[in-house]
Structure formats: structure tokens, C-alpha cells
Amino acid sequence: MTHAPTPAGARTPGTLTRLAAPLSALAAVVGAFAYVAAHDPNAPGHYPACPLLQLTGILCPGCGGLRTAHAVAHGDLAAALGANALALAGMALAALFLLHWCVRVIRARPVTVPVRPVHLWLGTGLVLVFTVVRNLPFGAALAP
Image (cartoon, rainbow, N blue to C red; front, side, top):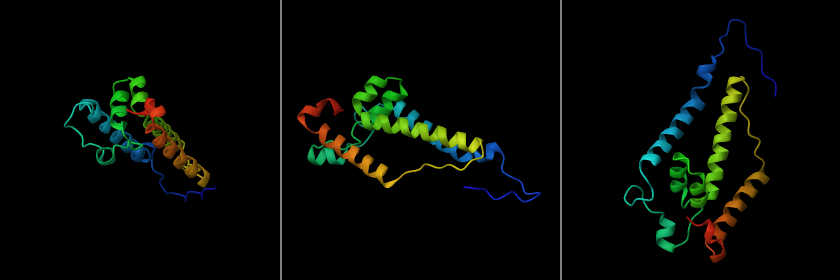
């Protein structure tokens, strides 16, 4: 992809201006993690129960995600992995994307993430397999 040349006299936004969006996203993530760190999801009354779990007894792929975030915020990666391994992997991918976004913005490059249909199918399949396995007796280690 080629970029059109900047017209003479036109101002290009500075690095801090370009970083406003990724830094705002980072601030929102830090704020959410700070809230979850301060309000333990293991204690009743702070968060609503999962409706799927409450109505059917089936763990959804997100069950244990708040406990994972709480454990990550407290630096306990073993507990985070035990609460929801898929959520921990998603948090790691989100952190990598935020880093990629900031680096690309600092270098004044477009932010691109080449997601192909096969990636979406593989991701959906992974979530489905994770959900089924964690609800079977032999997959109890994946349950929160």
C-alpha cells in the first residue's frame, strides 16, 4: 500500500496526537482491570451471575473471565490460567494488538491485522471445542 504524498504546507499530526486512540484504549483497559482488581469476583454481590450457567448449568466460554482478570491484575498467572485459559489467551492477544497498534502509530504506519476467513473459522472452532470440553467430566480442569 502506498501513501499519497503530503501536500506542501500541510501539517501532519504529531506522535502524541496519533497515539490518542491507542492510549485511550489502553487507559480504558487499565481502568477496567483496576476495577476488577479492587472488586473480587470470587466474593458474591459485585457482579451478576452468568445467565447461561444459571439457567442451564453449562459453562459458557467466558465463565471465569472476571476471575482471570482479577488474578492477572494481582499477578497470579497460575490462578488466571485455572480460572479461564481461553480468556487469558485472549487477554494476551489483546495486549499484543495494543503494542502493535502503538508501534505502528509511532512509526506513522497504517495499522493492519490481516484476518482471513480461515482465522475466524479456527477461532470459532477453538471457542466451541473449549466450551464443550470444559463441560465434560474429563475437561473439569478447564472449569473455573
